[in-house]
Image: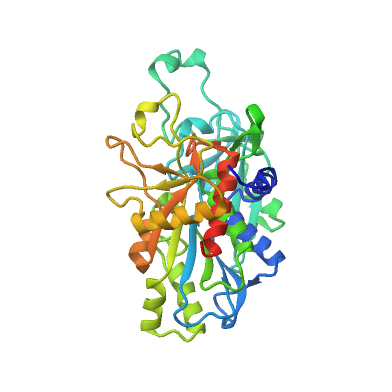
Length: 427
């Protein structure tokens, strides 16, 4: 495929996804890596510098970073890479500690649209943040702690013929210990102890379930990668690595915008339907002396590449895909199209993406849904609608999307990073 250093790229990605078991961890890991490379971390409550620089700001589980070149002016356009930090899973409910049949359980609710059966019989971890009475938040993550045990075939004789049916309340509550006192063991107190804080000080939590297994390469030639949260940490990582290589003398401002809550519809202060990106772009523009007309001129010349995972043709279900457009694992990142604007790609966006892939020396392939099976959507149409910035939807092809453990081709992931790097360089 012409993509250099695939092994190094995948090694770095696996380290990134391992360090990012929740959206909050992912945002902080992006910021940490950027700060190590000289980016200045900003606080939204402070006045921001107006000159050239490399900067990053975190809002809850979202992160936006940018490279502002020396020659930037009020009408300088933006080149934005949009992605999201969250993944389908489960989230701890309030008062999450319960017990049944002598076992400690964690009371969870479904987050987004996970493939429920894929979470059965896996060693799982908890990760997220705790809030204390003083208003501070504390990141916390466990090792392997929980499991959702499946009912044995002896007690469900029809499971292999009639199919598995899971009740979202009764059948997906994980176990995490043995009860000896008759009272449920406090899972929040366990998390507080790991975070080094007094459990009595914890007044709120945003804690998710994640697969604890490390990412692993497999298959002939180690061409496949299995990992949790590839939808959509693959795109966050690609944008991160590309931004690190973004030039300081470009004719645009390079921006990575990784939002939270995409799996829920993006309607939050840190989601793509919220004000985060608009706030950051407005403050960058204000620092450049941009008025209303300058801002609209800059947006009219700007681009947004929305990168999110897409579907490769499943070899066991080929009829579920478009009969003509047949993207495959190893064929390069996807250009995603939809006549009903579930993806925001148009002809101009297709040309932009083709130029980026050509400059990077990587192939690309087109994805469109089977007419009888409507596709999902992305942050692309949301940003295009809110800001009026031209948008193109792309992403890596996956199998097992929304599984606890998704599947990709390693060269597709490296090619995505290379293409986004070319996009930030102005291709």
